Length: 453
Image (cartoon, rainbow, N blue to C red; front, side):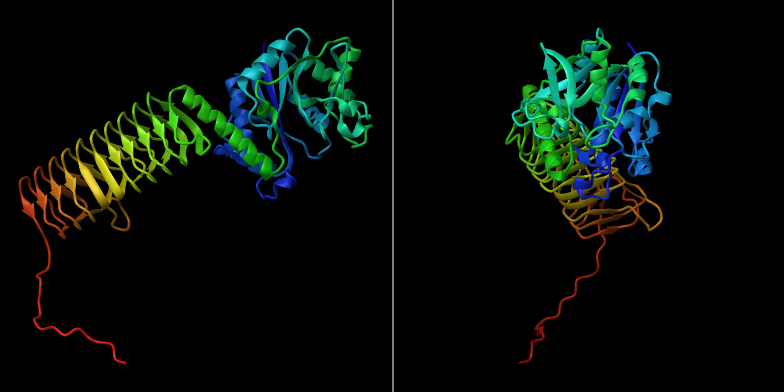
């Protein structure tokens, strides 16, 4: 059946103590609202309608690439009022899932189950049994059937003993939403229009409200302050680590791992503590990722060893590489097999051929390096003239001596050798030794200046 997703995202989030709207607060590297939109897309929703309010333009700008229909709630008069704003653009047929921009982790599996449960009744909801229901709306049942939802402030002492709570997530026939929403009133302690009142309306119409419970309680947890946000972040990361371990990944400590995107893994991958994965990454068989390393939109092939505190950003790393520690691979870095990139080496927009090495304190930018090359410590490609970037080409088996500066554009031939300490400004032919340095001067019996008392 055709499904519309309605997302309530108009709240200010005062308790976050932030200038950033609550639904834009980050969880696992993307805004809270982004997680909900991503789930709606996974459900193949016919339409995604998002209700905005506080800092509305800022929220809209953050999702300008998404196919979202925006509806403004100018006054904050409750959840029922928020969904009422949608009626002019809501289809008459099909069903709507009502979700929340600050409840980011409800799963597609749970929502699919809710949609199926709703198909015969016209209305369904997600409930949850909790040990301490204080502050939540209670599910009032009679002979097992849901009769009403009573908000905590409106509940009697007896109703406050109920431990089954309302999560606020519903699936409702659009036809019924058009019928019920205009009938909502604000005759309650809060003076707000409660969306929960549609359950009582369903009872009056002789409809049975279907209910399901999520597989994981954190799926329906909302975020109101930074403490809840941090707790939900840990729950999310714990689940990501669990899924990866089920795929065969070994963690030094799964509690100290962050996945802020997606990760494809091979067999026998080992990830040390405090590793961060961002964007879309792939790690091949028998790869080891050292402590404190960061991978962003990077692919690392099998048997590569990443030493601690190395940073990868849009890089392609071949098989059996040895990277780091403290190496940095920037966008456009493409490494073939058996490459060694050592401590404090930075690579940017550079292709490095098979079995080439740059082991210490080196910058390689805008370069094409062949196979079997040795790049000495302190070497830099001088690729920027203040206006334009220029390319350095180093052919197969070249040897670049330590502390050399290659001033691009420049071409170093096959088996060429660059003497240590050289500043190379012209092309060097194959099988040639090139060096450039000033003459060494010595003064005998030199007396070093002494400090006076």
